[in-house]
Image (tube, rainbow, N blue to C red; front, top):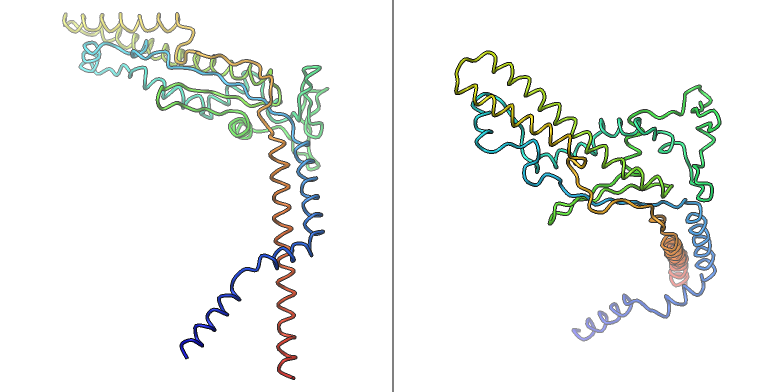
Length: 324
């Protein structure tokens, strides 16, 4: 009895094993499905790869310019005196670098950057770049290049993008910021249909963030100087007057150093250059992935068809055996 059960188990196990010859026979029977699907997907992959325009990336490597506390930092003694006087004189250079990195990606700064350099049309209304003529190729469905105006749809709504649309498109399609945790260096990259624009936008970003942070710190120092001068006029205590004079001197030095330092927050170590090779799209990879996807789908269809046929045959055979 035991031997009979083991024999039945071996038969069941053998039935559960995958018969490779049967699999290859099934694939061979459906070879035309595999060939047609793979060819169609490969052709579609080629068409998709060729339809995508070339995208170029320019990168600039920068380092914090004020590792020693920056123009806005004060020695510990003066900082303590300022605190006694009820004045907050700001933090050091490391905090300034972190703030500058966040400001660089902020909505307010990017909106101002886009409109200051008139980038709305290149961001939302171009479809390519003519390398021979070094000119934009505009999307004539939404923008009239001759009249330099945005068109309207059938309902009368203009295609002109909002500030939200522009910043979103710039963040998603153009700007990327990465930081090295080991060195603290930042790599700011710009992707663009134009290699010339990619390089220029990266350069302008660094120049603008340095200028923005400089103006912010100069304005803050000048406001503190005005406050200290007002406090100086209202106190008759000699010791406090001396403290205020020292703080005013330090803030004045801060303003002078800020105005004399072109690269105020970020120092350029490796400037952006006009890229000669595209970064996207990876056309060969697109074609390979499309071909593999087509082949896998075709194989799946062949096996599904074979399973459906076998499931129809089994009930018929069972019915015939029951009748006989």
